[in-house]
Image (tube, rainbow, N blue to C red; front, side, top):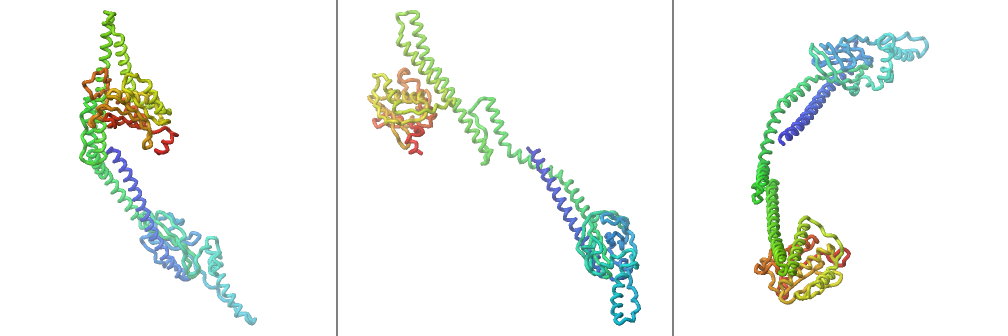
Amino acid sequence: MSLGATVVVAVALVAAGVAVLLSLRANLTGQAQSQADDTARRIALDVASRGADPNRYARLELPEDAPVQVTTEDGRLLAVSRGLERISGTGVAAVRAVRVPVATPTPTPTPSAVPGDDHGGGDDGGHGRGRGRGGRDDESRGGEDDDRHGGSGTASPAAGDDPVVGAIGRTVAHGTGRATLDGRTADYRFAMVKATDLAGQTVLIHAGASLTARESAVNTTAAAMLAGLPVLLLVVGGATWRVTRRALAPVEGIRREMAAITASEDLSRRVPEPAARDEVALLARTTNETLTALEAAVERQRRFVADASHELRSPIASLRTQLEVGSAHPHLLDVPGAVKDTERLQHLAGDLLLLARLDAGERPARRRVDLGELVREEVRRRPADRVPVTVDVEPLREVAGSRGQLARVVGNLVDNAQRHARAAVTVTVGLRDGLVVLAVGDDGAGVPAAERARIFERFVRLDDARSRDEGGAGLGLAIARDVAHRHDGTLTVGAAPAGGALFELRLPPAAGDPAASVRG
């Protein structure tokens, strides 16, 4: 876990470092670009203020610590920074300036004798000056400057955005290149600006700003990050390992104790619960609750097996004795007793099988059962020599479930009531609070309040003096309660109006029964 956390932190730190370096590089590049723009515009303003001086470009004040080129639009170098030995990235590789002659005004022709010739000649002279500036006097420029001087601005396609005479244009382009200045080669960020001087000459100013500071800052920052990353990862890994180990120490204690419990099969042991009120403490508490429930289940299973073995031993031993006596002395064979023991053994085996199926989570079939009619059938089937049973049921009180299991509940409750009643047993079926309620009461001694929860446990009989033959095995009420739970109902015991015990089975009505809508 610590290794995984360290790897995640390392990836996050590397990503953050790359982002920081990229941001730093972009910021410093922007600063160099602004510096190049400022230098180019400053020189462009100087160019725009110059007149028709043949040495106007040679007299430009160019910086000595940055590469600068002043070129014509067709790429001829007019001025260059002192010490520039090599350059790339501007589109002009030349580092030696050439002299560009400046056109001079053409002499004015002799006035004609025609009146008004002076005026015409003056106009002619003006045009002559324009032609002279763009004619043979400036062979290197052809007729290009004549059109610019005339203000048309359409002498060539490249001149479409040329600034007016004595002005500068916007920044035309940016780029990155290398230059060797005074023997030192470095990367530069270049800016190009157009300017037109007072003589009508349009030039391009290429000015660069060094990226050495950018590279130095980025390299220094990267080196610092690379040097600090292992230390930071070591600290993070150590802290994560320590915190993780401290946080998982209670979990390790729980694991060790659970391993010991599994090895010893001693379910009475419990895992340690941390004092902190966190998820680990909740885990330990839940684990102990699970162990408690498991211990109780195992204990119930052990008791169940022991009691079942004891209960089965009696009828089997009695039946065997009778069969052995009958085998040796046929005239002494107690056939009715053997049949009775066989029936008891069969009934006990059936109860144990039903409990095993209920413990396995078997869900009952969902069929509509008229509980009142079921009660009448079970009471009519009983022997007449028992305590009489009074039945008072409402018609069409239907529930959903297994008819056989519900019949077993009715039979067990009536058997228990007849076993403890003095003279009368009452059975009623009705609707109460949106539930179908089966109530079985007797006029016997009743069940003490302290024992009302215990009597639903398996193999429990409150009357120890009663014989097993008369008292049963103590499984009837346990089966009735489990069947009630499997049918989403409840089984409780209280005091009957006649003074005995009153067992009440509450079940939800079947779907479609009017009682179901009342309950909903």
